[in-house]
Image 1 (tube, rainbow, N blue to C red):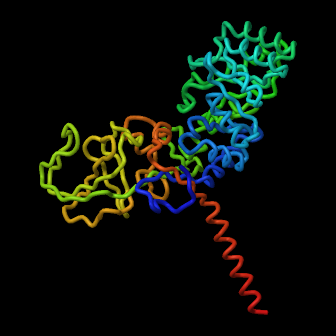
Image 2 (cartoon, rainbow, N blue to C red):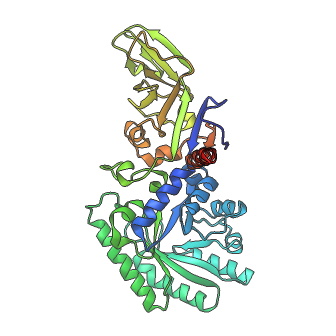
Image 3 (cartoon, helix red, strand yellow):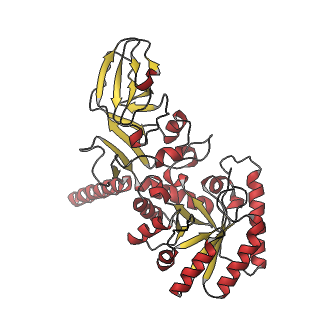
Amino acid sequence: MSSTVGPLEGLERATIIDPAAIRHNVRTIAVAVSPAKVMVAVKADGYGHGALTAAQAALDGGADWLGVAHVTEAIELRDSGIETPILAWLHTRDTDFIAAVERHIALGISGWEIEAVAEAAAALQTPAHVHLKIDTGLGRNGCPTEKWPELLRAAADHQERGLISVEGIFTHLAVADEPDRRETDEQLALFREAVATAEDAGITPDLRHAANTPAAMSRPDAHFDMVRVGVGVYGQSPFADRTGEDLGLKPTMELRTTVSNVKRVPAGQGISYGLTHRVDRPTSLGLIPLGYGDGVPRIAVDAPVRIGDRVYRSVGRVAMDQFVVDLEDPETEVQVGDDAVLFGGDSGLSAADWGAAAQTINYEIITRIGARVPRIVRDSGLDQIEADQEAEGVQQSTAQGVR
């Protein structure tokens, strides 16, 4: 659900998305990695921001490519009018390669897919654009190094027959978010060897890409011809010791609701299922109408919520629809209907704070917010444009008055 209304206007909970922040973050990354091109990952519904919203903002910010996991995600973007190059890299036996080739979607190839893609291209009598993926150590998708020469022979044969066009070679890094790890050096060395082997086999693609967000921001030697960035575009830091703000990024998502109940309780009051927490003094409790059914992690403990000008902490287990914060004062001024922000906006709270409370990472927090929470698109850049236009109008009126 998308809208351009103000935050929580007529809504009891909302995820607010700011395209201006996405544009800013893409521009910031593009400057850092220039002259390499930028592919922005908009998989998983644009990391929870809405695939089309994220894609359009990324393109407006200067992205050269878009990246998705599944062909179905790419088709949805094409159906929405996105004509920019798109790469899809995670396939199953049921992937519709014919639709992908028809819609000019580039395909990541790790091995078995090359024959299915070549068959689709033959049926359509048009070449498929592919990026060959080498597994340099992550151990997930990608061609094992011992089978790389075999994949290259198949690719060269199909390319010679006009069935495929190899426009890229890529890999994915395992520990780039820990810059001191030697494994990244090892992976990059293997990647360079794989590219050299491909060139020896007559395959010379225009695009070599290996860097994810952390490598894009910390390893210039990993930039090659293009970087593939995800979480950084959404204002999140991939590093444990640096925030998004430290990296010059702006948060793009705000999760907020309103307090749905306030009540005074005595010392010893147990809270939520399992009574895992009891208050040790008389206090007031605030009820927050978001739960694990909305994507708030059930495991979260002592998680932050800003209400007014204070940050309070969750107590007890997160339930399906709600959780409780300790308002720390039996005579609290917090009232039913007050805004409650979990992270983002000007709250000073981040998805990383909730990740720490839930023993997970900021990536998971922003991608797991459920469909029951309406998504509101509110472009702060448009607010600024309107403010500038209003100021310009005032100046013009003043100038006319002087005349």
